[in-house]
Amino acid sequence: MSVTIKDIAKAADVSLATVSRVLNGSGYVKETTREKVHDAIKQLHYTPSAIARSLSTNKTNTIGVIIPDINNPFFGEVIKGITQVADEHQLNIILCDTDDCKEKELKAIKLLREQRIEGILMTPTYGEEAHDSAYMSTLDNLGIPVILMDGHVKYANYSGVFIDHVQGAYDGVEALIHAGHEKIAIINGRLDSRPAKERFLGYKKALNKYAIPLHEQYIFNGEYDHERAYTMTKKILLLEDRPTAIFVSNNLSMLGCVKALNEQSLSIPDDMAILGFDKVDALNIIGMNISFINGPTTLMGKTGMNMLIESLEKQKDVHMRELKQITLLPELHLKGSEKKSV
Image (cartoon, rainbow, N blue to C red; front, side, top):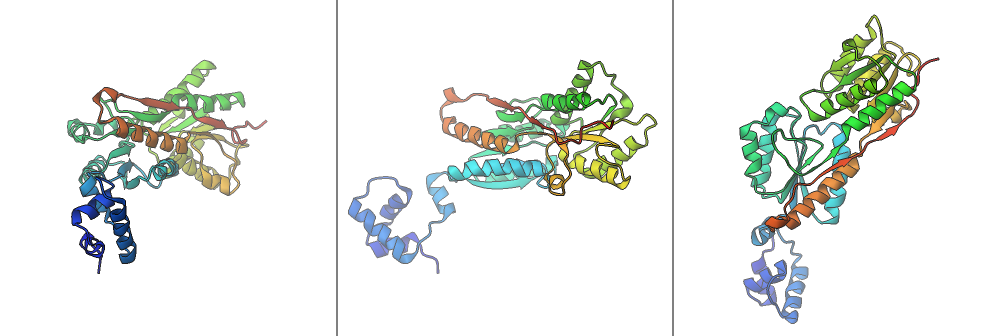
């Protein structure tokens, strides 16, 4: 049988209001009385209900996190950063995975609102065409801080933390060029997403800087998954004027690319050089030293969580509300897979 505050009040011989004030840390209570209540709580092994506490304080100390793909290790690293900061501030997290689906994202937003969360950290659905008037209305009417993580909402400005995809892709393609490559293919993500657009721009900027022609037959735009990248890699290998290197613009696509190369018994980098955006721990674990551009994912999660906490502290003061967007620089890690066969 569960213990209630009525039981605490009876054991301590005080009123319900006094027990409530002690539990919530509000109002004046004599020290001797406070000790009596605490003694009763210990004796009866009372654990306060989080739901009841949230109703009395009008605060849940819970934030919502919305991501498009929980299977992507990129978001696992982001969540790690979020939880590290949340734990420091004794904040709870409700995590929602949308499968990059607008309907599921809207459902998640409504669910979180019903849970009376304090704020939201989210990576919106990649397809910017999904950000229609109904979507915008749902976000605008939340009435709580929303912080974006490496994703944009079309036609709107929200505070957030982002990765410089243009610079990251430029650095990666430049490394391939410095290794002696001029025929460089790209396996990109969906071009209706901001990261894919910016990574493609970085690819083109690097080619242009070194006066290397942009060949349409080397451009492959797909999804953020290994199956599509596997198919595209096989098409690249069948090209009459085959490239000597492939820039793979996301981690899951890298898995598909490597699978296709292995099936053809092609050596990396002797038969095909590759360089990816975002690390793939699974490849490193099995001893494949694949060069990559590392987006500071854990740092992004920490930064986003700190931004949300700052917004929660300032939201009561209209004059302190401001749009804040932070861009993090990725780092290039060369492990040898970018080299050109002599």
